[in-house]
Amino acid sequence: MKLGPILAGIQSTKLCSADREQLQHPSIGGVVLFAHNFENREQLQDLCQSIRELREPRLLLAVDQEGGRVQRFTNGYTCLPPLARLGRLYDKSKQQALDYAYRHGRVMATETLLSGIDLSFAPVLDLDRGSCVIGNRALSEDPQIVISLAEAYLAGMRDAGMKSTGKHFPGHGSVEPDSHVDEVCDDRPLTELAASDLQPFQALAGKLDAIMMAHVVYPAVDRQAAGYSDYWIKTVLRGQLDFQGTVFSDDLGMFAAKVAGGLVERARLSLDAGCDAALICNPSELKLFLDTAGDDWPDASPALMRLYGHSRLDDEQLAMVPEWLQWTRSLEAMVT
Image (cartoon, rainbow, N blue to C red; front, top):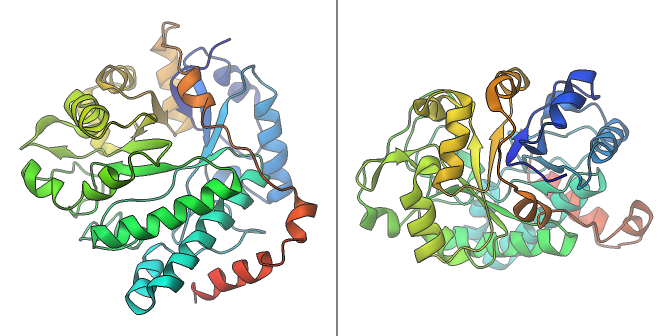
């Protein structure tokens, strides 16, 4: 059985019969977990194991475990600071900030992998330039600082055994509206985008395993939102940046994604534009999608299976790492 190109949300902390049926659909290739799927680590491990056992090849398991206000798992996990704290530290001590960026990436990835999850959609590569939804999720307003800190963060993820996902291409941080609840338009020309928001993606394209698209329209470049645009995906990302990894749409249930019609139309448009996989995170919207989706969906197995996580350590081995407790305490100290 192949993996389909849709990453789906599920209803609760355990799989119900409806979840099991939906996750067997040929369009489905993975699951995105949220806070409503979490009670504690043991429950989460059981949930992940039950999802892994559903299909072969197994579904990809993903989450947003960035830190700050976007951390889905909390009880029993290190309380991670928002990435902007690293940027502020960089202004005081570049080397300490790079060290802490590595710790952040490694601690986040290690704890997530040990829960049974393959992938956290991280790091955010947007610039902190006025977006109400990005804000302190971004490392800095300076693209060169974002590049430096992200390289250290990626090294931490890689050493933990997790693949990376840069988001939100080609940059969501310089426009104020929130694409979850509003249409988002960035009127700047390509030359201005290339001199700012695009820089982290261009510099890191060869080091990222995946990239998530932005539900933002850049009308000076293309009338379609970036996640529906073959110009942004095929010409710029694949062609000019020579990106070889997996391309995700952002959640197709977001307000800014609805300009493309119904959920099936949105998914088809994303895939036709060059996305390897698309997200439908709301379980009720997933049901609407599957009611009319049909069975004819492309095989996303190669694009998704290469993102499987492989934890370098188990819990007993981790307890013997002398730096671990110091790393977690130092990151939590940045939160207060």
